[in-house]
Every structure is written in structure tokens, then in C-alpha cells.
Image (tube, rainbow, N blue to C red):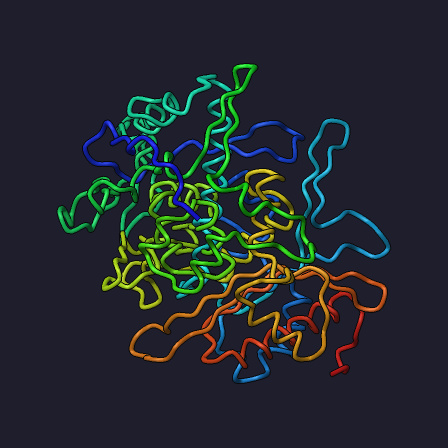
Length: 492
């Protein structure tokens, strides 16, 4: 397959150094309320169990988890979270369906949350690639929304230096000392000056609150502002509104969940026979994002992070509260998943918890990952269309899937069949002084038990071998069954 046509060289930002800032993000809550600003307050209600500084657990489900999971020493060492999304029986208010009741949005109330060390920061390895995927869909939606406002009907007027996107982002680089909010009191102190994030303890000024730079690393080739020319196609519209999509989205069309098979593009098939960073850069963005999630491919992931940029990823994670200084951490992506010897780059470690052994350039908590999957189940991330795309990429049940899931294999080994299964694994290392490899997994699972459909989210970390995650998911599945009255406490 020939490489995609060469586009205009990526425009350089008008500012000499790009700093971490809160960029404008929009979402469409299933068309019920139209476009809405993405904020922590918007994101928190549909999740329900996230609070500004912790997590609300369900006492009864936690007691079930204590008995079935924490009573096992080998499983009690894991960080994990469990969220029940099973609809009530008899039918009541769904835990995932968002509905419009006489013009008012009814948000599903999520109850049934349990876990262990669910807000403890630690490694999650390739699971952090979910953040880049989400940010890519968010970026697409934000640019689509901006284009409808400015009606440029032109790729250059949207993407080029001085274009609509960069003008909007450059405004966010200007600090506003008259509008200061404290995001974290100390160690480190973090403030928001207008839209600009300021933090102390940096090498250049350890005792001052200063901006966090997101400089281009490879000769100006991305990592700061999104590299729009290498990510999107813009098709001029006859009515003055252009359409925008990922470059290469025609090569691997999104299929609905449960589709029997998805054909990989010839470029992806050829790439998988001998992956490399050089070969990855010849693929389209959509092919590379497909590889990043479906195969957890590291060179493809490097290029996706490079194109979307740490600025956009961090802005989204922070503003949705999936990374939260108040909860002392959360989902964070500050690496490209390649070793330095192969061209890998990293930015900064998660600002909090500062100095913690569980903190790193790619890191997270069980609560933050479970919240992401809960919102995905509710179609609350970006838009319904974006959630369909993310479910397509994470669908483990697809025929031809390159990478499986520890959780999926654990259920399958016990002959437990599933209807729908969306997951992302991670394989990394435990924090020093341990030298052991850690296996991690997260999943949104739907399956039938008898005549009832159960639905739940599980996230598990720090297993020193696949067997522990296999056993964990089987026990968590039993916890959901018992919580919903399908088995008793004495049943194995």
C-alpha cells in the first residue's frame, strides 16, 4: 500500500513555547442537550462514584468483594475496581441509558462500586493508550464543532499557521493573573491562571509557580499542538460546512459491536509481519490508531501520541477529572510507549502524587480507568458516534482481533461465555525496588446468566502473572452475580 499523500508541512505554533493549558472541549450528550462544555462537573454526574477527593463505594457490594476476593491472599495484593451496570429487575431506570424526559436529560445513577486501593496511583503500561485514543476522538469532534462555527470550508484555513484551530489554542496560552484557581495546595502547588496550568518544583524554578512547557521534540514534529495535517482529512461541503474524519478511516470502516469479522487493511497486514517506527509512519492515522489499540503496537502508538500531542491529551484528562490532583492522581499519559533506544520520548510524570513510587510517565488508578469505561458504556465520551468508534477499537470478540485480554481469557478458561467485551491490557513493571513484570487489564463486560443480562466494569493492576488476573475476573464476575441475586454467598 502506498503511503498517504503528502500534505502541507505542519504549521508551527505562533507561540515560541507551548505550555500545558486547558483547551476548549465540547461533547454532545446523545443530542439531548446539544453541544456542552466538557468539565469535571459534567463528567462526574454520569459516573456517580467519583467525588472531588475520593470514591463512593457500595457497602453491600464491598462486603461481597471482601469475602470473595480479599479473602484470597494472592488477589488481595492487587489494585482493582468493580462497577455494576446491571439494569434493575424488574425493569426500572437503566444504569447506562441516557434519556430525554420532557426536554430534561435524565442521567443514569451508577451504584454498585467496590474495589481495593482504587485511588492508589500505579503503573498501567499500555492501558494508558486509551487516553490517546479518547483524545483523538475528542480532537475530531472539537474541530468539527469549530468548523461549523467559523465555516471555513477549507483544510488550510482550519489547520494552517494562523488558522482557526491554532488561533483558538494560542489564546489559551495567555495567562490571566486576575483569574487564578488553586488546583493543588502543595507538593507541588498547582494553579490555573485563566486557562494556563502553572506548577512549582520544576527544574528551572523550583520555588516558583511557572508554566509547564510542552515543547516539540523531534524537530518540531508534534507532541505539543496536535498535528492536524497528519491526522485528519477535510472534505469541503456544498453548503459551506466541511466534513472531517481521520485519515484512512475508509480503509478499516467502523463496525457495530458484535460484528463477526473486521478485515485489516493491506497496510496493517503488511506492517504486522515486521513492525517498525519507520513503517508505522507510512500508514494512515486511522490504521495506526487501530494498531495502537487492537494490537497494542508500540511504534504505532508513538506516532499517534505524536500526532494528537501531550497538550491535548493532558487537557482532556485533567478537565474531565480522570486525572485529579484532589484524588491524588488518575489516568496520565506522558510517554510514547517506545524505549529511548528505538526513538521513544517522554514528557513529564503525573504532577501528583509527587515523589510517589507508583508515579511515572504512564500511570493511573483503578478508579480512573473504571470511570472511563463506565462513561464509555453510557455513551458519554465525546458523542455517541465517538463511543461507537472506541468500542469498535476495543472489541475483544471481533474475529481477527490481534490481541486478547487477560480477563477475557480468564472467563473463557472457565467456559463462561460473553455477549460483548471491550478491553485493553497493559504489561509493564511494578514500582522499584521490585523487578517483577506487572500484568494489568480493564474491561466492560456484558453477558447472560440464566435469563438475566449482567453488565459490569472491572479494572485490575499489578498481577505478577496472567493467572492472577484470570482468577480475579472470575471472582469479580461472581461478585456481580451475588450482588444481583443470581447466586448466594455460600455458592462457589
